[in-house]
Length: 102
Image (cartoon, rainbow, N blue to C red):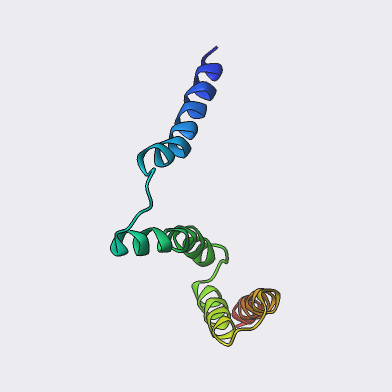
């Protein structure tokens, strides 16, 4: 019976999170500060979720740093996402392999 209560509470909380902004902000937001703040929220949340996973995904901090550096450099050069992801993964794999040999 308690699992039903947990699911109901989670459903209510999820609904409130989605419903409250629609009821609170009925008019267009005119504040430039608030608009710019809300504009960057998705990027901030994505970074907060991704960055720790990058550094804890490999067994070596060195391979994670090298993979991240390769990804940042290639993304800065406007290469496609698949190229960036494959190059970063390959560089982390090669670095991890070389560290295990040495």
